[in-house]
Each structure stands twice: as structure tokens, then as C-alpha cells.
Amino acid sequence: QVDLTAFRPHVLTRYLALPIPLRVGDSQADLKLSFQTDGQRSLQAEVQGSIPFLTLRRGDGKLVLKGGKLAGRLSMEGDKTEVSLTQFSLEDPPIRIAGKLQIDSTAPFFKVEVEGKEIDLISTGQAVSALIGDVPPVQKILEVVRGGQIPRVTFQAQGRSVDELGKLKNLFIRGNIREGRAFVSEEMVGVQGLNFELEGIKGDVTLSKGILEAKNLEARWGEKVKVEEGLFRWGLAGE
Image (cartoon, rainbow, N blue to C red; front, top):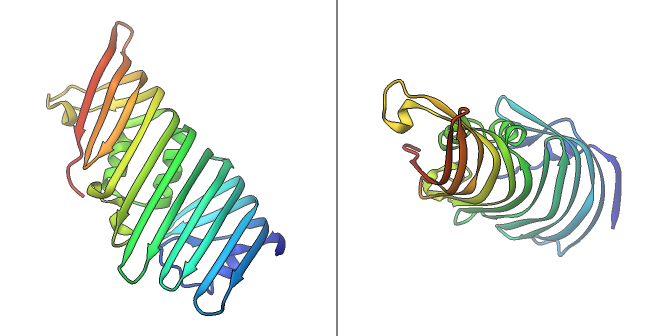
């Protein structure tokens, strides 16, 4: 077992050939590590600790996460890697998630499964945008959904590369929203000049095979129009 105080992870990652386009910038962590290895491309490790600040970079984009706590496990067997997070929480942006990343560099195959709770859409959306870059379907959703709280959401994606994880056909998201806010454009409704904003949105949301669907919708349009038991379906074109 190893205890690391004021550890600077960005120094270590400079020497690692990670199979993902994310890089660690200036960061600090206090960690407790335990690991086993047979010296032949096999590694089992567990970690828990806190992260006062963590900087992630993707191309020219940068994201700084603050007040983190984590507990997780890493398993590497030959060309297969699995990273499991039993706990990951942040103060800024406020978020609580757990999840799993599976990588098979021979196939190749990448799979991500994440569950989040009590998520603020504005701060989390900004973080996601900075982290993944210009992924068209994600950017389209963020252009429409302008705010709200997500009590619980599950996210799944898989593909043969990291880039394929952002393709619509490989994404599945399920959650619910409350106190949401969304901008509906003339492009979405097919009526020129009709642009409006919905507030107080509440309902169940899924994204599957490129179709964003919201059921059991409640929302307000201005001061006089109220939507109840609504249904919204939007096909996200393009990759």
C-alpha cells in the first residue's frame, strides 16, 4: 500500500501512453493506493482519496475540477483495461457519479457506463462541452437544454474508438429532469419564425439511436400557456 500526499499526477502521466485523447494538466491529489502485479502486463489496483483540483486537457480545451473525492479500481490484463469508479464527487462543478470504462486495445473496443445523481445541467453541460470537444449530437442537446436539475441519469456508450463513443448510434441516455429550461427553434418545429423558450420543465427523458424523447412532460410557455402530460420527440440528424 502506498500513501501519496500532495501528489502531482500530471508529472506521472507525461510518461504514460494512454489510449484516450485526454491529458492531465496541473493537478493535486491525496491518495491511498494498493496494487498487485505479476510483472507480465497484469495489474490490479485500488484507490481512494481526495483531489483538491484536477486539470484535464483535450486539444486546446481545458477543464478544471475542484473538491473531488473518489474510490475506484483498476484492472489491466494484457490488452484489456477496466476502470471502475464506485464513487466520484465534485464540489465544482457539483456532481456525483459512479461508472465503468472498459478498453480492449486489440479488438479494439471501448465501453463506458455512468450513473449520475443530483446533477446541475448548466455547470455540468459546460464541463462536458469542454471535456469532449465539438461532438455534434452533444452540442445540439446543449443548445436546446439550457438548464435544470437531473435527480438521476444513466449513460452508456460503446464503439471501436474513443471518437465512436460520441456517435449517436452508440449512445443511450435515460434520466429525468426537473425545473428545466429549453429553447425550441424554428428548425425543430418546422415553422419559420417560431422560436420560444419552455420553463419549469419536468419529465422523463431518453436518448436512443439518435432520437431524443421526453415523456410525461410538464412545462410553462410564457405566463399563460402550460403543458401537461406532454410528449416531445426530436431526431438528431448527422453524426
